[in-house]
Length: 198
Image (cartoon, rainbow, N blue to C red):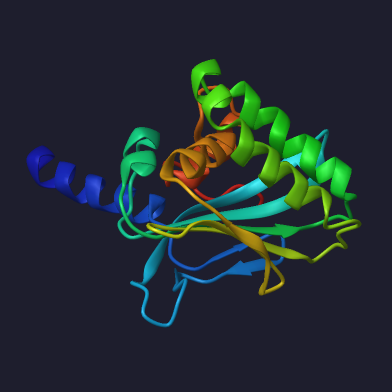
């Protein structure tokens, strides 16, 4: 009986941790996404709630070609990727920019930061150009090989693509790096826990 139960338990645990479409803090994240008409479908790898001092800040989902539960595997995975963020409170461009850039700087090696300084400055300037961002705004940070990282706000392209896979990795480390602001959110994005904030 014990041998029969172990595979069943593993199956149930796997099903409990799997993420399909997710509803978090009243926000629905679809199970799949496509970055372009000819793009490959992406699957929701994990999703969670970013909070600060009990204040709900945003819901975030990670979309990949294939599900991965290790940060290093996500960063190394080729092909399209998407981070989708839905704001749960109004923010100024300065608040948004400082919050993301500070964590980016904490989670990338100094040599990488020096090499990527022009791209990081471009990303910072792009975020600052957004002015006030109301509650309910939807950000999509899309990476497409050969094109780079593209920011969309409420479905509208903002700025030009920022080239290079290294810059995409630097941005992804905001949530998947060694020093995330919210470790349980990193685990949720990797599909290691149930989505937070349900």
